[in-house]
Image 1 (tube, one colour):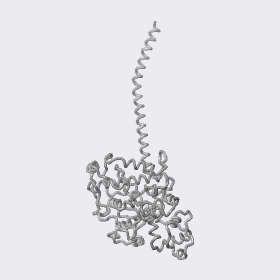
Image 2: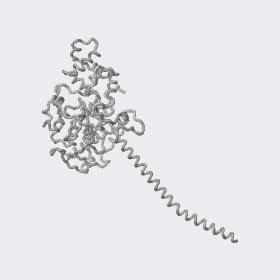
Image 3: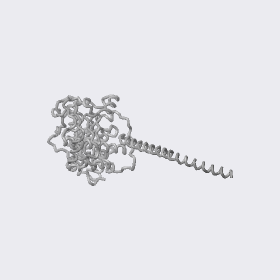
Image 4: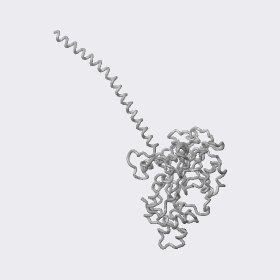
Length: 440
């Protein structure tokens, strides 16, 4: 009987211990659950940070599936353009900013203007919703940058919408350029040498670095830099020879390593490009179809000597009269009789955009609007605007899309394909569409 009572007492004590344990289990369970949730949040946050670093640093490999086509590389840009304005809070712009940074606004894509072959939008219709957004966005006070006459953020809704639109275009261009660099140029050396910055002009007062791309508005951009530097009061009074042969402007490679590094880190780096084959035709017309005491003897003579059958003594002596077919034979020849020239060297090689990470990428096709936008951003004097005149051969027809097609109609399909391949990185990096339908 005593043994039975002991067993009953033990059973009762066991049930009590189980109840006590049951009470403690939920506390341990919740502790483990909260610990796991905290770890998951930290993991997601670190993933976001890694993606941000990847997007900001050129030269790293893209994650995810490989993008084999130019159209796929532009997918993010296209999706961003489909979002309407007002879906994100509009941040105020401050002026000036060095190096230039642009806020991320939402926008809408429009088709390119006929003949431009440039895939950025050219104009946006301002809707009631847009106006409401612009009216409610914060007003940014204007202040000068070494100039009391410069103005800051534009005041009218239309001007402010234009300002936002151009900021968006810059964001898209820089994003695409970084993606292309990450995919195709990830193995390049990150060391900046004087050669990489030899085509960059320096304007210290307004902290501008401009990379010269010949036949993409460089003459007038040099005029702008000369006015900003105080070397002239107006762009119209600066002659062509003073621009190109006066040595009035400083180049970045003229500074020591410390001076180069400091300017690259703190100045606004500017690059203006042009549709590659149109730029090529413009260079050919300027250098070979007009009198030229340098290009005819230095380039014309060896080109005629190698590619023209039964060339006359006069042509061999002067180098004049190079045809477009002969010029293209020279350009596409891996064993050129004379070296490359900056007037037809691809901009992707001339200005090293994958290494220098430009703050502003402008286009010749919309030069005046974008150049003036940049000047306002940098605090330039209000009366300084980008000149539109052509000072060399002003009566000659300007090189256009139509004229470019006329020149390339002289070539075979395979030659046109090789020319496109020669400038492929320019087409890819700066988002120009294929110039001919039969290209692949």
